[in-house]
Length: 430
Image (cartoon, rainbow, N blue to C red; front, side, top):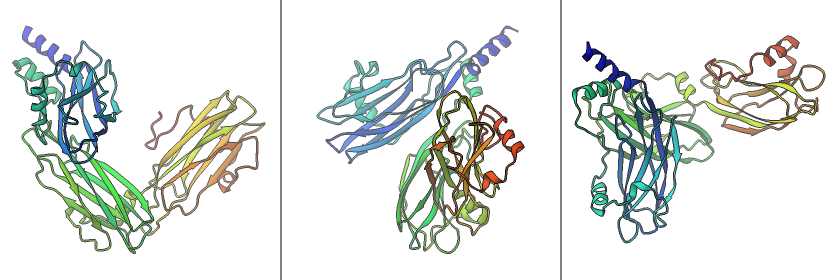
């Protein structure tokens, strides 16, 4: 019985604490290139963490970008983590160390740190007393990412297995290059994924419209094998490029098999020839391609009214309503005479040969003596839309369109008193 209780306590201690995702990105600059650097992302107590990541590179450029990430965990007796980053480098005349610490982190962390290694002004206790031999050891682990191994007793091993802290393999994948198309303007979406989708942070979608015949792109992320396939020591990333180059929508792709080390590929694609093919594009219908080529729509600005308090609801929608992620409703009551707002989402037209969308915004309000409505439409939009729209509700004639004529008093009232919260695209309320 005692053994059962002990096992229960150990398992609970692993599962009931705090688990925080830590991601640090940025740039390193050094005037004396080439230089070598290693970036170490760790958590203060090392226990149960998957955040122990070592990124080692050599650079011929004076400015380099980096990204390290992982999960930091504390058990049942602590509800915060203390991640830190160390940067070992050869910038200058001797070996150097830069570092930064974070304390009492209770939620996911995403930080950008740009470091000038010439100044070496990023300091903390983690670099104090660090021997040059230790820095050299770190810089010798070229192109490796480390998963820490410790001696464990049986109870700790059970705990680690249950929480999924298996080393597996974790590879950083970056693909960059150019896309060329003679029939500009054209729209394209670059999608970077990994074959089994499980445990990955590599699902990156880059969607753009280009007026130029040649454009640059870059997508990157982490591909992992671990908890569900601990015996698998490689990943299989692939890239898909959806596009409107030519007279029809198209698809190009490339796969990489059994990749075990960090991958940095340059891929220049001529979309006119459409000669980059793999199994990922086979059988893909046109509607699926059109879905990936969604247009991002963002509208922000201010709403002003001299009669306070007033209530308002802002609806951002696309004309056909079908399959769009853009249906956002923002409802508020305010004592201020001017308020800021921002709504955004993705819109696409389900007709395969229709290469435009028709978003519109409707503002329902109680500014004045009765329920009011203001609206604006955008027609034949064939690129991402980012608009600033400042609206004075006192001026009844300022913003009018056909969308307000379709709604009676009851429909306007329903919008205004639907909720104090914002409706998300999947129907949830934030």
